[in-house]
Amino acid sequence: MNPLGRPLLAVTLFLSFTHASASKVYRCPQADGGVLFQQTACSQGEVLRIESPAVGWSGLRPAEKAQLQKDRPPTADKARSAAARGSQTDWQGRGESKACWGRRQRLEKARAKLRRGYAPAEGERLRRQRDEHEDYLRRFC
Image (cartoon, rainbow, N blue to C red; front, side, top):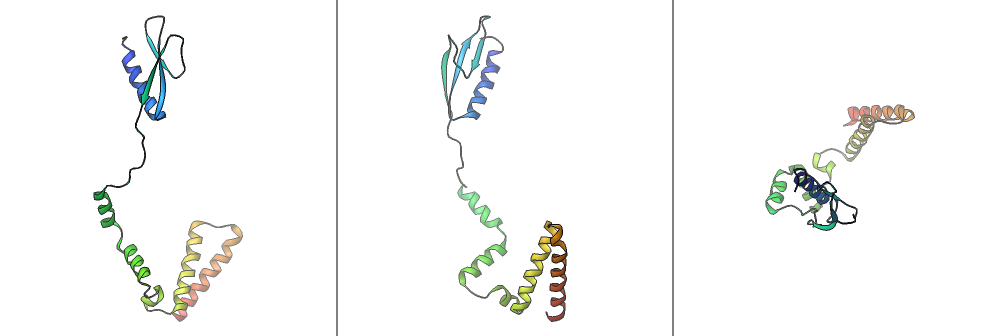
């Protein structure tokens, strides 16, 4: 085998593994004594069949699942468990009135929209909504 044959073979095998699970590679002898590897058939070439295992998502191992559960923020677990119990709603748990809680939610929604960006015609309306909600919360909550 000539000096370029092994590196060329390694590159060809690597590329074929990344392309498909099963592909054909043709080994074609050259006039100068070298060997050329290609994906199209040649007149005197032999077919090399390259099989690669299926690659895909295998899921988390048990230790990884345990670590994920341990690292999950506690607030998400509390919210899920409260919803599953069907206990107090958010505004009851905070000890504020339903109206104040609703205003806080709408205020946060308007602020989020202002942070994210908006159409030029929407800007004045969003700022007015934000100011009205803030004023209501200052006065009554």
